Image (cartoon, rainbow, N blue to C red; front, side, top):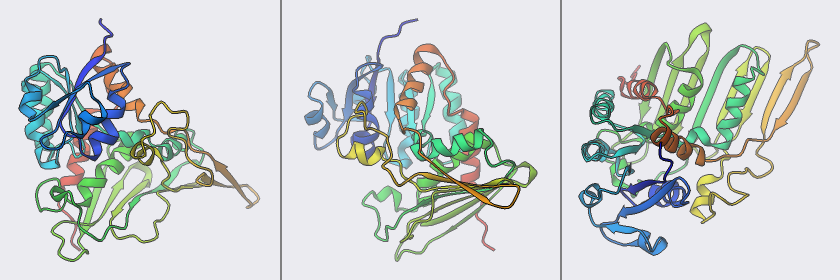
Length: 343
């Protein structure tokens, strides 16, 4: 089977296209960045002079050389553009939230099978440095039988986002659909589908049309419970991960540096890329038989979104399973779309 670079087009050069996609696709080892849709300002063309700056999505989809399309447009357009890309004979990598509902997600997966193209979901937070340390603690069973996990994504953003699609009351808007998919995907990748779940959402910012606070409670076998929290009104963030087990506890602040580094122009090939600064280590506290506490600090593993793009390449060129499984995406959508508890 050919191992040639995958010719790729990106549907938008907003923050995600500029930060999370183009720097990885442009590395010219596994991918070839063919072009980016830019309806107005041609900023991508300035940064990458050899690419095509398409004026419309249809122009990109009509390019026979493009094999892979990255759907990184506003949430409410994912379903339409992803469907068009598949029908145009392209593989697709779609940002979160993948679709407005589990029913529409199934339709996209089914369409991919019908046309013989791969449908992949962009869940880059599996490759965050802080989460990779959480995963190691869980897999090595350092804390014994697990009792509870708290996962948080706290921000303080009282003003409405300039991205209006996030603030309008439409499918896929609000903090639950913005940050919830990241956190749910991390939890599901570790523990699978929960037996039961509960959703709580509320709105606190003045004149906001969408939720800016969300909590999910997931129940697993043997009483293990996961609490997922996302909020836009937290002035003093708590640790992003707190895990308690029968033998001890673990906590870790959110400290992955990749987004900030990419925003600052650091290349994914830079040797400092993805390495957390000192002072952000995870803390493991273990109880000894005599009742004393043993405290250990653990450095996070290197964060590296290249892992996701390696997986995209392996799926398309080698037909290796993509780590973000379709059933996991459907479980995520079903949890997100369940009715909210109102007391």
